[in-house]
Image (cartoon, rainbow, N blue to C red; front, side):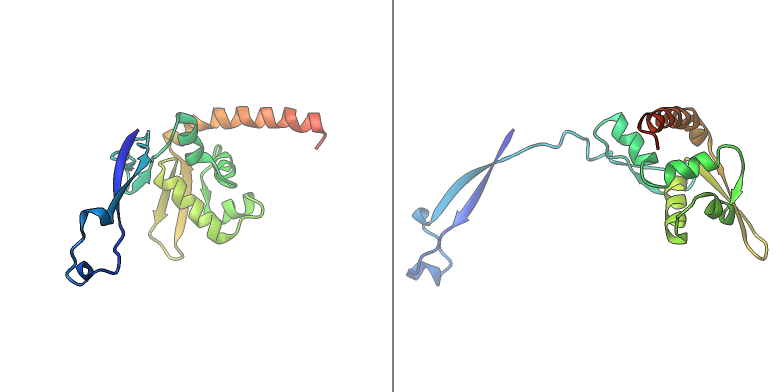
Length: 160
């Protein structure tokens, strides 16, 4: 624990106030504890190899890092939908029930920035965009499958 000394100035209504002079009895010190952050703040960002965008990797443990990448309401569902096929935007929108176009676009951008999916744009009219899993995204599928098996067992226990 480091101790930071803060100076608190108490200026009374004396003649020194006009000259901006503070005499010694007018200054008091207080000690406030400051705690060092246990993460390395210098390396909290890294650049994605594909597009050079900065990705926030400030995580407190590997589990936290993993859930920052695949956590949320729609990321796991998008990854699960892309496990078998290459899908276009409209197909993803139909496959993921209840997602708004704004949330789908935002989630796809986050997954692409994290390097979990690829986005392929065809230069034609009308524009066509296809999404597929990257190698990193493919590595996640067995874990999502295990979570699915666990959830099925839990849902059977509580009879959902």
